[in-house]
Image 1 (cartoon, rainbow, N blue to C red):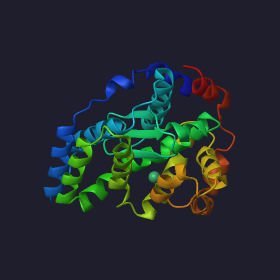
Image 2: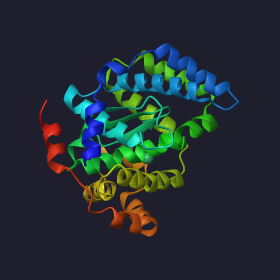
Image 3: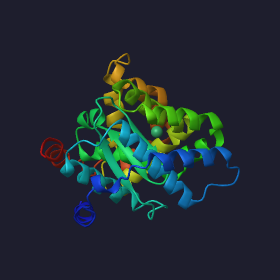
Image 4: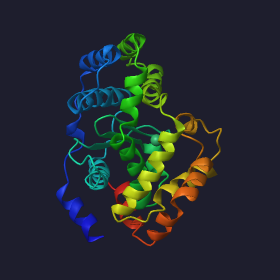
Length: 274
Ligand SMILES: [Zn+2]
């Protein structure tokens, strides 16, 4: 608890200022990935990720609430600082979109949607979701999928969408395209792997380890036909399956860290106030 507070004090940085829109460079990066046969190094990973992040921000801007953005960055950086890739330029953003989704961009950029955050009840739940996405970056799940699947046609589609991003319809497609691009190649095993590592990271960060399972239960309780869940359900295994897998493999870890802080009140303060 004290460590969390300490981290929050030190890591306060303006989140909104950290993103940099550079569509052309993103397209070049994607083209280069398509042609590349060699390993993507960390510098390239970070550059590709930053440009993808910029692209996604062109589709759905950050929620105009600097205090909330700083809070989510503080929690995310605290968790990321304890991984095996603490030195990545980690940044976290809440996108102004009503759908429920979260996704990780290579190099350490992670987005949650306003809709997902609004359904959370505590900082432990936020930490659980952030830790799942951090796990994807730490394990380079999306980067490996991009490297495996990138094709020349990707650049053309990306360009068309980028050019048409002013209409709301293309904005929706842009979000879908961006998310699919890194999620299409992810195996179910990568998702379940991120759940397991996410539970470990949240517990390591001092949170009640049941934060991620609690969010999965919230999702499970919703109507699966709800259109705001369509993308989440397309890109992740069903919540029930994820809960079952966590129960099978992680029950001792969950129970050992079930008594750690949830910080529901602190979360609600940041969620409501500007
Ligand atoms: Zn995932």
